[in-house]
Amino acid sequence: MKAAIAAYGIPESKVHPIPAYSIQYSEEIPAVLPAAVEEFLTAHEPRLFTYSLFRPEFTMDALFDAFAAVRERYPRAGLLLAGPGEVPEEARATLVRLRIDSAVLAPGNMPHAQFLTAVQRCDVFVRTHLRDGVCTSVLEALGLGVPVVASEDGLRPASVVTFAPGDSQELANKLLSVLGDLPRFRAEVRLPEVDDNLDREVALLLRAGSGARA
Image 1 (spheres, one colour):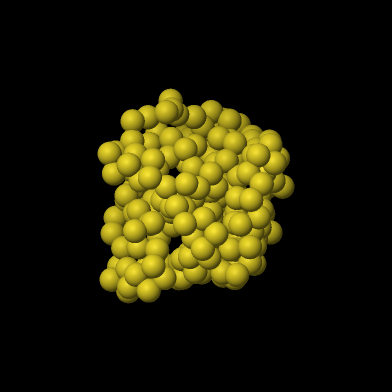
Image 2: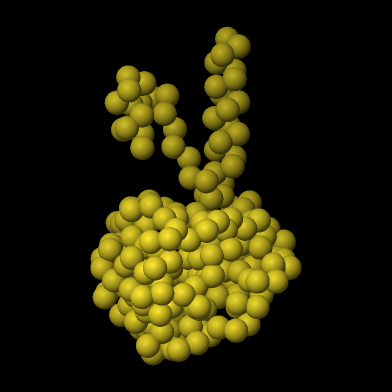
């Protein structure tokens, strides 16, 4: 990202990428969930959670194919799809074709406390983005002790179970592996060391402000 911004002619010395996730990042949970989400979580087991959008980089077709394979082993499995407010017609047709339409709920964007509560209530957090760097939602799931299965982008934390981006078969295999031994994978979840990025951001803004006044 720094290199891309510098390509516009901005000196690299003026570009300071700071991760959004910080040691102060917290929320009071559990929060009361919407009735539809609560009913969905109660009705399905195991429960998968993903934060995705219907854009090519999220490889939703691979996710749905993999989830269909999971449903063959676990007929009561459910996939909570946070983010999109509605499922496009083409994607809905895919869900019907795979016979998983009743097992996928898209509640839209959720308030942060509800988001974290839903993640904590699920068995596996799934991240299928092709290349999303050190993803905040992945760190959130790890911080809650939830196993994460995510596409390999070279930057995933050590305890994340990775699969080749866009490979639905490998994703299905990894999901089935984790679901088949949940106690072990839960015990292996580790949140990597997190910096005080809020302090870094404040310090940078104060330095910038001092320089402008000078």
